[in-house]
Amino acid sequence: MVARILDPAQQLVIATHNAGKLREISALLAPYGMSCVSAGALGLDEPEETGTTFVENALLKAHAAAKASGLPALADDSGLSVTALGGRPGVYTADWAERQWFEGEPGRDWFMAMGKVEGLLCQAGPTVDRSCWFTSVLAIAWPDGGEAVYDGRIDGTFTWPPRGIMGFGYDPAFVPAGSALTFAELPLEEKQRISHRADAFAKLVAAQFGNDRAAP
Image 1 (cartoon, rainbow, N blue to C red):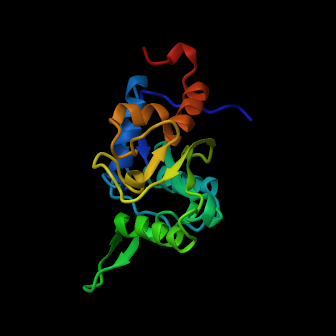
Image 2: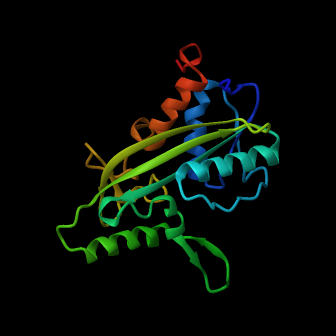
């Protein structure tokens, strides 16, 4: 199969309605001349994530956005896996944040999601293993059905109570290995340098842009 390469002259759809993800991915792609627009800004529906792996869900979202927009699309599927919980929440990371308000409007409560993890860890006792890791899978899809996948990971520790205001999702409860700060306490530049998404993105850059198109 011939490798597919992104064209900086063509807009790239970031297949997300999550403003935090859009900011991170757009910032990572900006040095390579890519102009990004979110699926939310285009009014695209979010497809149901029926996959059982990060790769399946990332490809599902990327292909849906590419087909609906007629543009290449990049999707991220990422999540937190906790060793003592057998890798949960894993691919269901976002589902653990789902809540229903009394008026019937759905939404996500990330503090509630972090509290679920902490509750399960507390049930296991004070000596429970709090090691965990974030996984990120970046999938690119083209309107003609072409695709490419890149994965990344970062290990760390689940901490409580949550700390910091600069991250999103489970970031306030995740302390990356070698740091005393949570992802939500780290400056964005530092998080972008070491994160699971940065790991996957480095592989994407090597394949899509190469040394001749690398950022200065």
